[in-house]
Amino acid sequence: MKKEKRKGRGMFVFICIAAFFVSAGIGVATKTLIKPAWAKEYSVEWSDEIGTLYKDISYGPGEANKFDLYLPKDNSQKSYGLVVYLHAGGFTQGDKSGDVEMLSWLCSKGYVAVGINYTLRNETNEKSVLSQSNEIKEAIPKVIEEAEKYGYHIDEMAIGGGSAGHALAMIYAYRDAKEAPVPVKLLFGAVGPSSFYAEDWDVYSFDQDTDEAREGAAGLFGVMGGVELTPEEIKDGSYIEKLKPISAVMWVDQNTVPSVVAYGKYDKVQPFKGSQRLLEAYKKYNVDYRYFECSHSGHGLQNDNKVYKEWMEAVEEYLDKYMPAGK
Image (cartoon, rainbow, N blue to C red; front, side):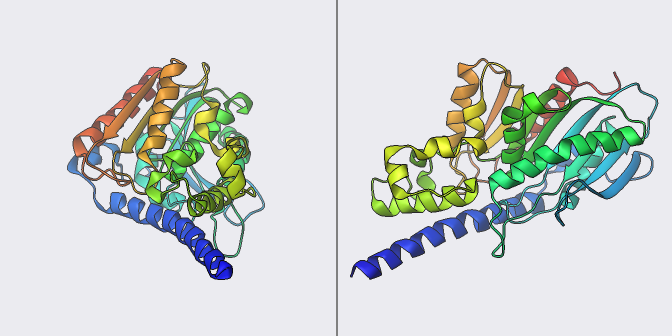
């Protein structure tokens, strides 16, 4: 009987892990397929009239350690702002090529824009949010060095992304900003998990006071954090500190950069409660933020076009305010 019980719990852990990664990919696919008319304002088809695009520049030894560099047509400025946009895909899918329109739009505004790939988790490796965040950290100096080779001096940067990309962008902007080669001026993104408090993850029933719930939380959070977690650590709360390296909210303080974020109230991939914790941190430390609640949507934000548009308008507003192009 005990063996069967353990087997059942093991299956629950597997289901929780699979559900997160698969659902995240589906949510992103839905968002990609359904594009409202207003999105054309922020989606530009790449052409030589915008600038020059260099693809698949290596920044590390891994096969996925590559970035695409978008350089604006005007190369006469003394310095440029860099905007990094990280792709979505539940940490297991996706590619920088999926963000060509966003990156082209950013470049058309006069920014040096960059899409960065990171090593995705699959059944043959043990990659995690932690390892992926460290790859992004490693990539940024290489990106700036590469832009310099072409005569584009970078003196400040912003970073954003969607879903998994948003999570990684927050980690860089909040955890790694002090070590960035240039000042980080802005964070923007949508539906990225920012914290891993079990009580927030009610969409997976991790808020329940049961052994099964604690095993599920230890399994999923351990995979994401690249650490070993036990149900006992979930119960006594000691797991929180182990997950700090991937918990963006734990790095928010009085020095946190301005942030523009959007979340779906009915998100079944990453919990809406987690975004509320992030909102409270912004308020506590007087961060200059814009928080958009899509009250009719899940992970894809597809049911709140008006709010989604307001979020994108705020991104542009904050870019113009904190890192104006063509300065």
